[in-house]
Length: 558
Image (cartoon, rainbow, N blue to C red; front, side, top):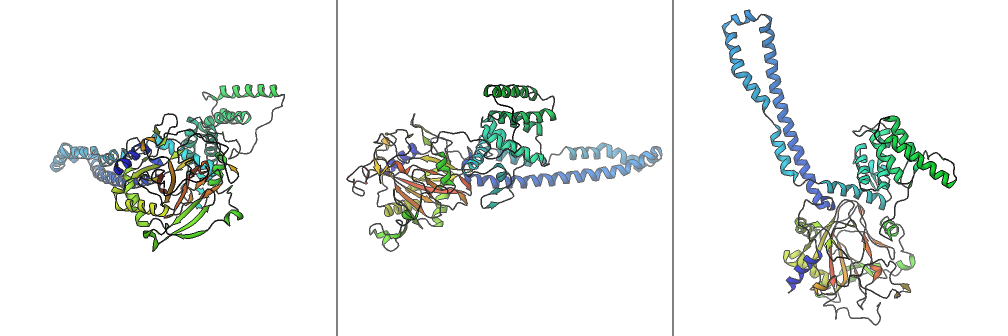
């Protein structure tokens, strides 16, 4: 029965897509590392091809040099040259066989090995979706951490200066990707950066006319007609016969004159300041707490103060005299007071982490979310990572970790979901969400004098876990299996908390009150990873089996 529950849990809550490692490679740094070695192997193969071509060319040059010397002598006095019988014989021999040998040499194709190697590895290459996804990830990082395009282009990320530079063509491709998605806000930022680098005499394949063509229209879409006109005039000056430039310019000018006339205003020339982050307002999206969420990711807007900090403590925790923790109790630190969030230190050893990653890597598939309308698991742009599910039977390490979670929390894991392992890729994130399934509730409920829920845009999904028969997700136990150089915090926008990854530690919180009502304050997010690779594993603990381990309280919000 326990085995059946675990398998059912994996079917319901893990990816329902094919377990292929090629799809959406950008969503997992762990799998992208394989591409680094693939590229290294291809470079070696390319070097061998070049060496073979050079060897072939050296042999052909040797032939050419020898034959050049012979023909200079023979053509100076053909009859005299052929009068010697040896010369006549050697001429016949050369033309009969030696030139055929040279022809065979020239026709040899040293590229066969390289092409064959390319064909073998091509099946694991990123596709167009990966390239687009990686570009969008950079834009997501740009927005969340308020980085301008030049910072990315010059490799100037917070706390990190590298030689990972973006060329004019790279910036143009970024802008074109955004343009093709009708994301004119980011298109403008990246096309402007491409133009800036091109104006600074950086070499490029893309032409200035091509950049101006995309940039002027994107600026027009952002509602900046004066600057769109100025950019289009630059385009016409460079390429008077451009297909669209002349027509666009006349249209923009007429539209601007009409707007000025209707608003009874005079023409103001466009700003001479270059377009940069902040020139245009970023369009609003589906997420009501976007600004608060991203500010927390940057370490801003934290609601930690001296009064709250005075209520936070650290202690040794033995799981209420649990025999397995008596001689080595867990180090427990308070991260937040209400709702209570605690961090446990030294939960996982380096060896355990490596084993879990080893087990998970072959199974990693794009993480999914449940569509609240259809109930079907699907991928979503707001959750960018790859995950795998591990059973206790997979390895003794998994069984040991599950038991440790039960010992620490005092909650049974018999009805919990499998251990989920996730690896976040380029810009990997999980936007604000609830771990528990939502159902209608009294929005007037208050905790500590505050209304229970700040954001009321949640979707009711009361039957999300019905087929499991284990009730709702009562608690979350989240293991951090890597340090992250920049970004990657777990944030709680409702009350302004940010918890930063520390390898080997784990955080724990309850998603439900003792009454079974959802604690809507626990809406949380995994911030985009700016620099580094983020590995986590988590255990979602369910209600069934906790009746005597966590009894009901006297009120709905105990």
